[in-house]
Length: 120
Image 1 (spheres, helix red, strand yellow):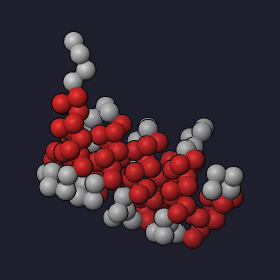
Image 2: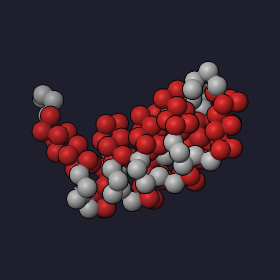
Image 3: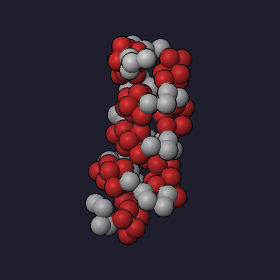
Image 4: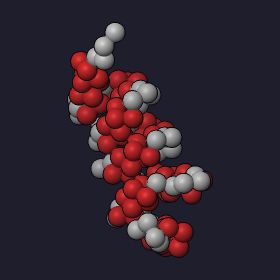
């Protein structure tokens, strides 16, 4: 049985589309493929409860796109930072994206500078 790009492409388009219903985005947020979850994480129409769940995704790519989400709030940015701090090997890309985000509170930027200065 060969690899089926058609199914992936369809899910990817749904994950990226601003017209995809919330229930479908919730479903796609549980997809085993990191690209699909990352696309849901960056979609500006993804509901906040889904973004909150993806903020602690095991794959750094998903957390990276959550940190870039256009409607992310400071509380979710702090959630991502706390998750990164809990990891043995936090992601450089996620730390850098958090640090660049204007919505990250100043004290969190100081924490990043103190703990991860070499990453930024």
